[in-house]
Length: 558
Image 1 (cartoon, rainbow, N blue to C red):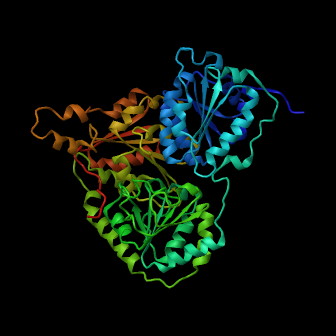
Image 2 (cartoon, rainbow, N blue to C red):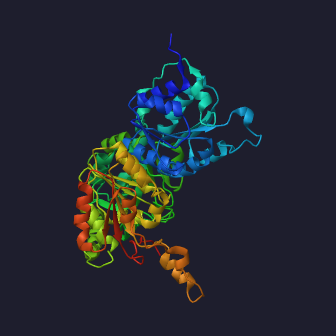
Image 3 (tube, helix red, strand yellow):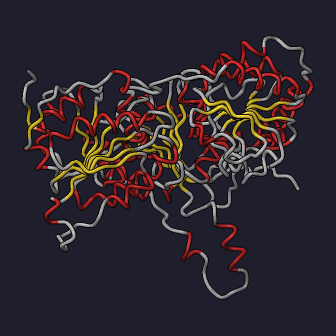
């Protein structure tokens, strides 16, 4: 007969059994569970905001490749739901646990209580109330399954009690075991039927100019080797979404970099010239397709995705293959064999990439002060270890790092914000906790860093040794020139809308007890980054740049 456990003991043991080494929370919630977790070797990471909690869990989940737990009490549920948007868009498997006031208190103007279900519905794959401890095992198993099956995404359990105390004080008679299948991504690797594979192979081989575009689903499937093999077999250039940056070596002769809104100019031009595009684990949204212009809407597409709802979502002329990208590619490669291919298109693409890099060489070597951002990117590329993790914020931070920092496609990892400004710093802390032996460099603008600079205290208190590089241009640089143009001769000061600071973030870091290095001269960049990477403690490198610097602009058809 199974041992009867309190809800808190059962949950703590189940979390430990899932393989989680850390949970992320903000007080006051699941206190008994948190106490029990200490004895089970699971570290409890207290942050300063619910968003910080979720973003740390997000970074951890993306590097660990498995479901990750975060907690908030009832009144913090709305903040937690807002933070899950980025994890939802980026396909991170987060298990969010919140408390709620008992059912008898609902719909009676209870203090600090609003309905949670509508908040979590748009940002989770699965969300449910758990009103009795006996229901916890079933609900948690379902949540874990939903978080990683098909397209990984966040899930939510709303536990009875403002701090989940009713669940914790209840009893559970089931053993706290977790199916090993639920402990990592992907849990299943289905493949299409042989007839579907044959049809796709024939369509691909019939096209003269083929381009491959890989997305986050390909990265999660771990199919970098298969991508390169397919590209070699077809003499096909390979692009990626920003979320799949680094799945292959970005300097590989077939690599054309990020495609879409955040692309360097040659990438979109190459994809637009294709007779057929193979999308692999890529959700064909507006960002990776430059608002559905790259490739053109009428272009034939072969799309591989584990989620059948994604097949043909954006391109009507789609031949869809529903399956795990890695295993589907292996079957497709066997069907394609070694066809005779004209390598001219791939050579043309490589020539465009080489010409663009040559054009950018002077910017990468710039000696201008304030520091030119391309030079900063070049120095980060040199400083990032062979197994390093680069974490980038949204907007210009994503464009700079996605176009100007090359990755080895082997030991290095790249994480990017799916749209939430300020995500990168707490996410980098989570990534470091998931990979304590790897160096983590965070690239953030100053506007983004202001969002969560309180987590400097978390980094110091918990000894989380990340290197945070701040592109400090004293404003929101991405929109600055447009705003100045809009202002024109109209009376007023555009500075009041997009400029702030100047702030010395090295001194801010030092006030938190964190090491700070300020760089104003590009000659000091390399030694500053080398010193920061060598330090076994959190450090902020504050780099003074110019707000009028423009990130590379994507090519688009007339």
